[in-house]
Length: 74
Image (cartoon, rainbow, N blue to C red):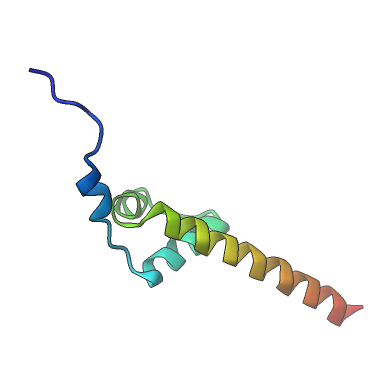
């Protein structure tokens, strides 16, 4: 009668987002600008683990570049 609302495990494994798409999504998130429709596409296609890894790498690169900039100026 009632169907479960939980996503099936097969659908979660079918997410195939490219590395470029993941990097673009993380970059737009760091800037804070994103269209709602593109956000929905990212939610459907990108693996959350990839977002976490790329996000941590982006924050690490941002911090390293800020440290380098401060050292260069001073």
